[in-house]
Amino acid sequence: MSHIASTLSNLVQQTAFFGLSWGNYLMIIIALVFMYLAIKKGYEPLLLIPISFGMLLVNMYPDIMLKIEDSSNGVGGLLSYFYLLDDWSILPSLIFLGVGAMTDFSPLIANPISFLMGAAAQFGIYVAYIMAVLMGFPDKAAAAISIIGGADGPTSIFLAGKLGQTKYLGPIAVAAYSYMSLVPIIQPPIMKLFTTEEERKIRMDQLRPVSQLEKILFPIIVTIVVVMILPTTAPLIGMLMLGNLFKESGVVPQLTETASNALMYIVVILLGTSVGGCTSAEAFLNVDTLKIVALGLIAFAFGTAGGVWLGKLLSKLTHGKINPLIGSAGVSAVPMAARVSQKVGQEADPSNFLLMHAMGPNVAGVIGTAVAAGTFMAMFGVN
Image 1 (cartoon, helix red, strand yellow):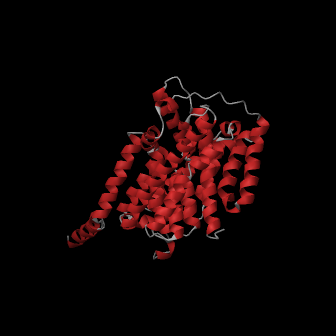
Image 2: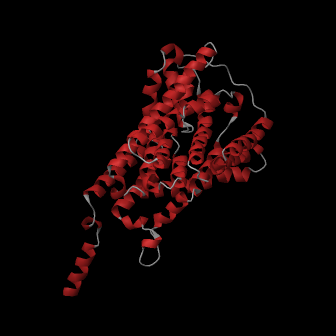
Image 3: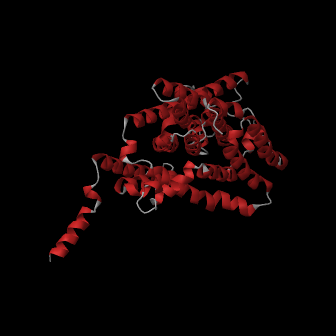
């Protein structure tokens, strides 16, 4: 009888209830809120569901992120193996491969001025970098944090790993993906603040047709130009353009299908759960995390504003041929930021269609964020 009692006592002691802190319970609540936003509100569910579930798991069973070298039997926790693929920059690069295979660069090719708006939307990155340094973060940590302003989770993870800032990776990744998910909430007030009703009603001319040859040459030329200038961008720009070349060449439909569907979704599962696994209470609930979340919001707001400001300038220079709203899509949350430009434009004029015009700055923003990351790596001499 005593043996049964002892066994039951040991079983009870092994439950999570006896090992969790108040911080773990708080993180579990946050995970459930993220799940609600993803499932009920539809905020980027492909990202938020795996992230929130990884967050849930690590705060109930911290050893799921146990490093191999810290284990007693030489076997690490499940999510620690997923995380290694983040740390080695494999998963962010594969995400870019899938994005390239799914993305049509025709709006950018047809309207090259979109590159300027994509570049302007990176303004928030540099504002956040300066503010992070002023807040006391080391230079490399400030650079890794500032990339949140590009609304590009994979690039944020990539740069944090390359700059050796893995201790901040969890908060950076969660902030980046959270703001990506909240694009429909964060961007419209900023867009409306800096534009007039008349500007939001501007109709743009239909984009010119883009030839198949242009579509094939674009990823090749961009890769050569960007990687020759910033070789450290090769993993991101190279994979983005390789995926797009799969799509536009028309001769490898199997690779296009795999990169844009099966492989993409496998990578999202691995990346999302491993990012969530970085959010244990001990790692996440501290002052630095609050600073990172605040800096990410500031960076994202300034990035949106920067794109709109340049859009307003170009609108004046072209005598009203460019709707400033499409500049906000220069943050690289593809294609959600472009859809928000369309939505805000249609609130002013229901018959106005800005989506394809906004896709130009949107995909330019993906390239721009990768270039910003490469610039920081070059600044700090990181290969």
